Length: 426
Figure 1 (cartoon, helix red, strand yellow):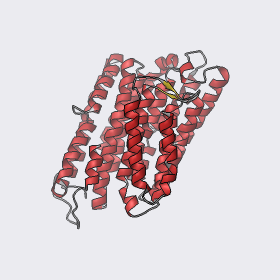
Figure 2 (tube, helix red, strand yellow):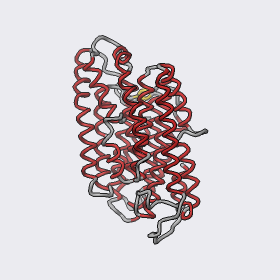
Figure 3 (cartoon, one colour):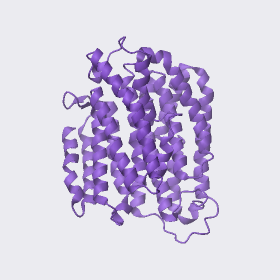
Figure 4 (cartoon, helix red, strand yellow):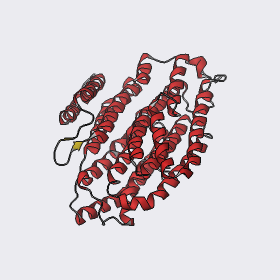
């Protein structure tokens, strides 16, 4: 694992050579394939005292590599117009390294350090390559939401380290140090990062203003940092969690229903996909809050499935945006007449988003429903509503964008490029 991270370090000088874009992209793909074939998925490996990996972090490291490769494939317009493409490559590699270090951290302090460090390249991506002037407001929202929740987390980690010997995740034990204040500060930063309903206002803004690569990495991996953090610290919060998790579960499920209703009223495609992420993450938070083995494993499956699926939807929205110059569903309609071959991809990725078989989302949702209904059967009503509205807003997005009469002000018609079909296939 260390050798692969070293490969990524050595790619940094390649960002500044003439044809570095394709070279870095292909090398990242080779590193990903090497990771896939060389490491046993169900093993535990240590890189040093403070870095190691197990099956939890390994799946998310693979997801980070994969999404970063697809980000470079999706952002070809930056290379075509030579819009600071060297710096863009540098930011992507910096973000990938930060994510790998975050997922491979064994100690709480190093995890916190890299967790916050991954915010810096994301902000640069939004500020530097975003579309509208409002991107500065979106960046400030992202920064303040994350930092306000994270500083109490730092204080909580330092006080825990001061009181006990448990520096490393595997040494965290269920002791009497965790009171209600520790519970809140340890959990709040991860809930903002997920994000949970009521703490989610930064997400639609950041997604709408970010370039396609920023949206892909936000939806694909950065939301998963919160879920990964919760998976790690729940070992510590077992006794308090059994008492207080009911509040978290209730807010996330009611929020999932309300956000799904908001999705049905969205006109902006990116905004709709961003709100659907909040609804999906509500299920993940609910599954984790039940504290049983089904919720634990299936939330991981759901996070990986959602990372792949929502990245695909953002790619599709960007392909339409590059053709039509708008993200509005009032302009993006009748695309079946314009780009018939892309309609199949819209259908496949939309059906994955609403958890139709044989997608990975279906497995994750069934497992999460199982864990939550086993915990309290009354949540069945909210789960039914979330599932129904999830299908409803996905059909709304698909049918409005693909069917109908296409926009009369349209002046160009280009079907998909080979690059875009490759991107969606991957």
